Length: 366
Image 1 (cartoon, rainbow, N blue to C red):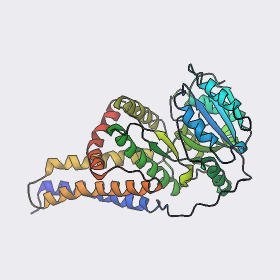
Image 2 (image 1 turned 90 degrees about the horizontal axis):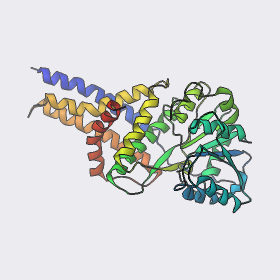
Image 3 (image 1 turned 30 degrees about the horizontal axis):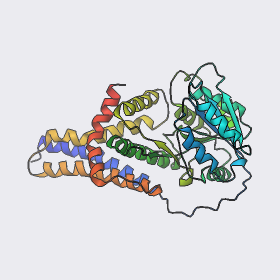
Image 4 (image 1 turned 60 degrees about the horizontal axis):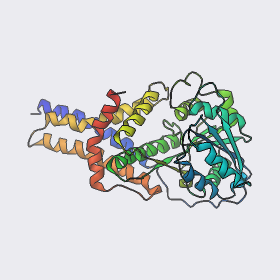
């Protein structure tokens, strides 16, 4: 006779199996076996690179080094928007621009009524002289083909597409556990971003790397009503673009590398900021993705309340613990095919066990 505990375990197994099936359907979108198209030294599309910054003197040398290595950098318009920095950021950029006179560089001050990245994006977009704008953070790095690969992407875009979420990979600095923890989370989010975008229903974006049309941005005003929110420029732009069309870009040359949090204080501060903006968004599927992920993370721990030392309940418990872990690991490694930089299996297992408690703390301490 089936016991009450066994019935509960079977009920817990059902959402786990549905989650694993969903992960398998997304994995099919992570097909990165393709030949890189040859990038011409001259492409007809024009592109402005918008870089808001605030007290980034430590990160700017890496960014500027990446920019000066870009193929035919003279073809791009670089717009740096200073959000009233109190350090030497503007001086560093000015000196760099003077030493590279062939590069079109604009260094402007945030002129909006308020501080913050959203105000900087508005200011920069108004000053751009091109149809398309690529907005990146001042602390990112990228390959030498980064900008030209984005121009190539523009040539392939359908006319109705107005916003393309650029993808990011983590960049390790100290290589400690908290960085590894944040890296695994970021890589999973990158995978979700790409897969949902390829399905035509994107639910995530990153402000560190995103492409948008100037005319659409200035007309739609995606920051109206949310300028008081300290972050979320990327997601509010995605939300505004969905009715018209948000595309995707899986060219690894268009990936930006961004530093991971290297201490728990930084991690929790960043994640709470992310969580705060999610509640204000109305992107179909975003909240359900978060709730489903949290549920699946906690089901293995919940099922321990109903485990027996032998019999079918023990087998069900082992399956409930194993299936989501294998699905997540398979998805994780598939995403990392774009960048050969993974964690070892035992560290991934530890992160998988700890993550539900960390995520719960982020939610409860919002």
